Image (cartoon, rainbow, N blue to C red; front, side, top):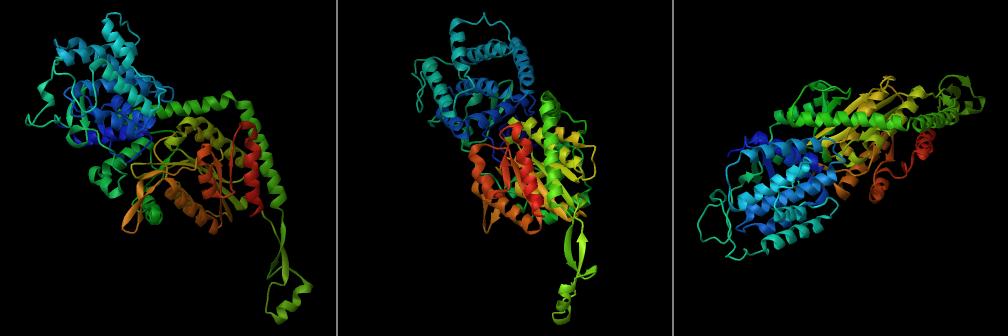
Length: 575
């Protein structure tokens, strides 16, 4: 079976999205009987990596590699992993149950038409049939007692750690198949071995299996040597990625995923040329118009669009469910900002070359040739201040999307009521593109509701997003500029940073330091940067490194107005 490169790319993107991790080469990709990327199984493969880690799963499949019953063991283990990953991910991914039911119905239909099978193939069909009948809530009383017992042991729960899940899967194989890693079961154990799975000479101890072989209703592709699972390579530099994905296909995918472009190609190219340098060399930019409308697309992108639309509805519903407290927070935050403006944006007396003569300074004009011997009143008003509100919408925010959307809306609404121009955007990165989605511009005071279109996807290149936003802010007419970032302070992107003759990951300490340098650059240029921290305790040191004292964590809605108000007040004081 030959799989088209376009389907391999699609399978890879599905896995990346489900894993919330981008740039690795998946050890396993799934396709249907027509060779098309299988949406459900590739989503499960990504969810397995996300929830149980790369190493335990790799070690599990490496343990069975070369065994004469590897084809059977492989598919049984995936049934167990599917059960575990689905149990853990389905509460967070509304589309997953529907995808599972559709796949289950297709399996039962195909099994009902299958010819008589023997040995391992028949056992696999019986257990697969029983597993997916259970998934559909159908009666499984027809299962033999031994099959039911095996299925109960195989359907792993979702709350296990990766190492525990690995050990439990190996224990299952040992109990029911007398499997010991590194050796075949006793030779007297009869089994059926389809010839499709083997090739080469009989001298080899390890059976060589084709990279693309039967799996489920279709095929599975294994990227490791001789069909085995292998350690994921390090994240690849952008030049490696483009060898496998054409720019035209990738640009089309990004546009369909995030919606219509905000800027024309000329404007976008100019932004990219100015921003994608230094640590961000090799990155691409895309700016989307976040008005909540997209092109009519189907397939994988269409499924993601539906999931995003459901998230938007949830954002609004959860905001309204606690609407009284949210509106009270807006009133309190608005008052805090107005008080700060009253206290620190009062008219000031400044020295000038024209105005009211200051007799005590005349001597400076005579002896020091200082022409600033006059005074005048300088009126500082909110019209001299603009704010950019930037929301991190990477996949690490998936569990708090509604909270981030609500916080962004409350800040924007409070600033709007104070007549401060505010622009609201979100950012993430996908397949080498950093994507900024614009929900409203500075003077679009009636479009704060668009912020509820926020949804999480991809990685995050905080430094590049801040750099682009800073460049755009400098083009504005306002004297004072402020960026308020809602982020978990966890920069992580697939495109590496050039370091002389080598490259460094845009993640961990390297990513934090790079982002901190970008924040310092903005501050030196007169742009204030503050962060409303949305992450976990373990990432607080990163937030301190990047933002210094100019960040705060919102622990409860009751603290929201005071905490954010203090941050903004401190910045207004320093204008």
